[in-house]
Length: 448
Image (cartoon, rainbow, N blue to C red; front, side, top):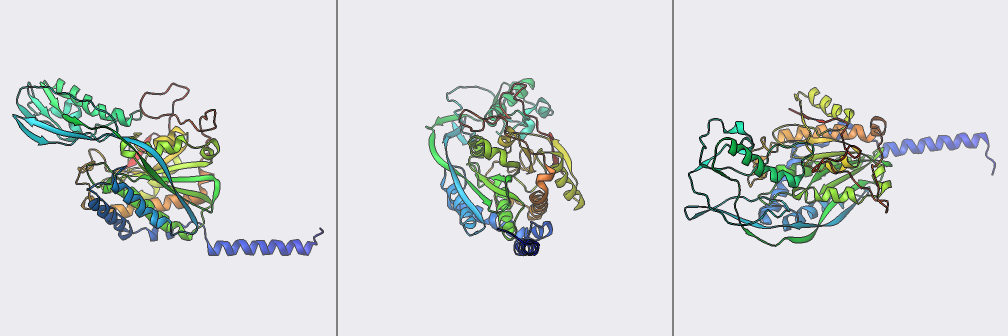
């Protein structure tokens, strides 16, 4: 078929008009528009609903529980309203152990919290006689310096089981061993006869059952440059988990609604992870079951874990992601400092894939007094800080959705098995061999 010059010109004009029409109907993601959509009221309403879900389901939203199922259904009901995004769940099996805990002094039983991890801790009885005294609070009981001013020599020290500070190679399961071993070392140095962290009286059989990750992604956008954004949805079994991590989950819900009127240049995928509190099981299941092509398509991963209310921090990532958050926060009067990287949340699996990571994280041990406790409820939230974090995220997502492929170097997945599935390198637990070692581009966090 022959085309005249006039026909070609007319076709070009028509194509340009069509592109302009598409842009006017579905514009690229706009930072100011996204920020206007993210408000304290929207963020807090979802947190209020998650609190109600916990109240109606035994007080928690832990994985493999009615509260978690209700949380998944609550978010999925909102995702299903979109005609421009597709949503799905990813099932996986996870093992849960129930323990009952008591502490007995002179024949009187006291209830104490037990470790909430999918591990078998052990059982057995023992007797230690001596004066029981209270040790330093929280993570300060993990170090000998924390016992300065405490008379614990030849006494039995009773401390809580909050997490001890950890580092890059910290395994979520090993971390709870460190809770005990660090305190044993510290109390021994202080001359104590014994330390009671938790006394396990009864161990119940583990329960294996299906649970879910929940995902949604934009239909528009370059499928070979996927921006993944995630937050874990489950709480611990001690409480409703409104800061940890209803705050991150609420942020993702708000971002989802804000993005509905835009067509991102790079595809955006949101994920609400299950069983994070049991060892990053949901996110690790996801990264371990990607094909080579699927993993290579991921440009970067942003993680949001406890975005309220006490500090503002950004997990490690390439310089550009870190700088985007810092520049926004500083420009809006939020002072920032750098903190050490830890790998005990859901970005770990993506670092293991050799992907750039970034995001926001705040309010855990030593910062949030209600971390992993029953009091981590709706009253534990600062809405003003939530909005600051939300608007910062809206800005960064806007920039990356438009310019991410230009700003972030594309990195292929590290390894595949015989079936073409990705084999993520672990970034916690036993340190990998030099050829497998993972070192994120930026080993710092951003915080106030």
